[in-house]
Length: 139
Image (cartoon, rainbow, N blue to C red; front, top):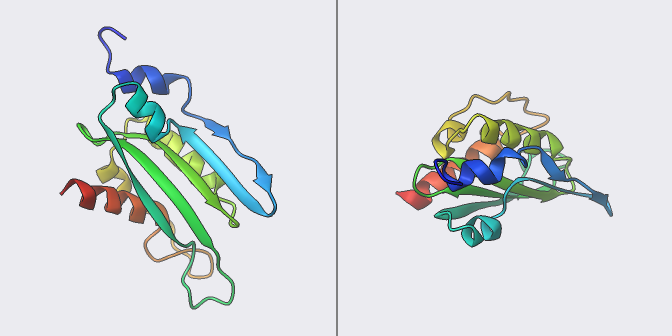
């Protein structure tokens, strides 16, 4: 790892979705590295956890999603994320994978313009929300 930041070496080969089973109508997806893996590799990392609906609660049908966003506390670079819920979150794991490849920060993700369709998602996307939670933790 000499000459490179630890997170660059760890993320180079794992920036795509690593795991994406659909079990009992639930989706589990992960991309990048977990907080446990980051800390084990001496990366000053933290995570933010979003637990909430994937679309407004006043909609006839919605369900809870769980997102754990892992980031470097020193430079706020996104390191990974884990997703769980009945709603198919694989497209969100893909978005985080792109964020990792582009060395985006939690600030980049927090203010990325996401498509809003009232029948399908929140006015502020859950990816934006979990990144804003991470920013709040660092304040």
